[in-house]
Image (cartoon, rainbow, N blue to C red; front, side, top):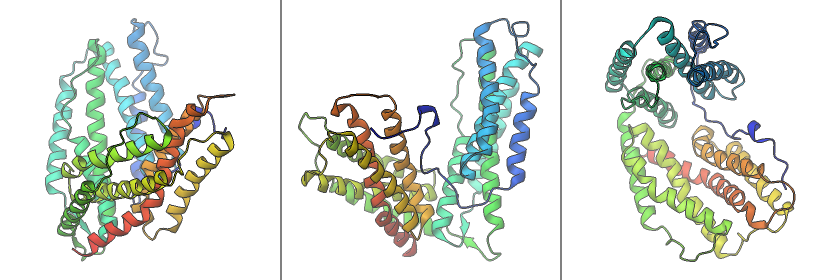
Amino acid sequence: MPDVRRNEELESPVPPSVPVDVAASHFEAARERVRSLLATLPTPLGPDEIPNGHVRQHLTDAASTASDGLDEARTARTELVALRELRSAREHARYAAAGWSVADRGRTDAPFREEHSQTVLAAREAMQAHEYVGTDPVRAALVHARIETALQRANETDGRPRADSELLAVAECGERAESAQAYLDDARHLQSQFDAALPDDAGTLEPVLTAGAQTLLAAVRDRREDLPPETTTDDRTPGRIVFEELRWEAESGISRLTDAVGPASAVVDANSQLARFQAIDRIQTRREADELARPSDGKTVRDIRQTAYDALTAALESSSQPELVRAILVDAGHKVMAADRWLTHHQGEISASTLDRSVADYWHATALARSASAATQQTVQALASD
């Protein structure tokens, strides 16, 4: 069996990133926001303050998660991951603070709903005013895709409380308001930082991104027409598992392109979709050559796992467009992490089929990683020709 760390220590080998610098002041503002929210809570938050144990546990857990998020952000491997950790910390801290404000001051959900509505309105205005400035279409696509996504998340309005307690329902309203504001803050900051790094004569790349997205969407549709048929046998070997999952992702992923929030997201998603089609070809070729037989011993599984890790490293190090390749490899890294996590559930002597799930995920990651370069080249060409 491969030597895999304990489950709680596992993380994806390829964290997401964005090719723009995040200012230290932005991180500090988010940390200060978390600290100020947590400072409103009594310490300790005990039964005298919140008699209901179930409700109290929700608030203390949220406060603890927020504190942990500050630590996670400090050790994050990329600035984008740090932003995500701090955003989550803000959400949890606001949940706890809003819940406590109900018990402490009898606060209702009305001010939180109004706050959320104002943030949604601001996010919509930002989406309408968003300009796709840039000089390099690839870098612009990657940055603007993150901005598009953040503005979309800030603009989400569907969020009726799920809690069975009035206090916790208000806490959820506070969390939702904070989440929207955090996404909006991050979107504005990424836009500001990206704009500041551009030359004064940088113009809009929206026509380039839009045309590139249309070209790539057409390529994805053509590839979908050529998908190999679904398997009809009943066997559940790892070779069949990886083929079926890649095929399903490639076939269903086209809706993500047609429904993309903007042209930048469409380009980045199409890039990943093209890699999936390339990966299917690789898996199909290996299946036909009987190279995906179920491994019968631990050494073979270790070798399969190491091959996946090596493929991820090679794809990043050999690419002339590492950030665009990384967008594909993040998904591949999640497959490796899932495979590693599954391995931690099993020790001692086990049947060969027990590891089918992990083996399939390692093969999935390897195929994606080895397909990233060709997909990226196609994406770059589509952006250059428009």
